[in-house]
Length: 83
Image (cartoon, rainbow, N blue to C red; front, side):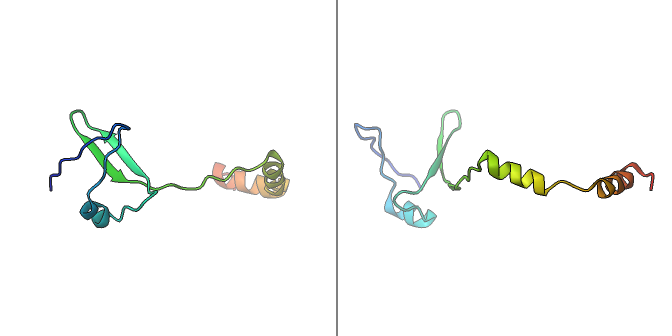
């Protein structure tokens, strides 16, 4: 399929409805633009929410993740082959 699109004074283009429907592109969706030399490629994109954790939360996880000396030694022995 080939379409001719017009760029607005704000640099915007309108994707034909048939393509929006075909690719499931809706208002507010994200597209990825790739520059391939003499071509521009648009692909549907995905936005993932990023969680931020406080230093206190991370410190709690680190403290909860501490191994007792006996268990740490046993694990290290298994990896070193001295068991």
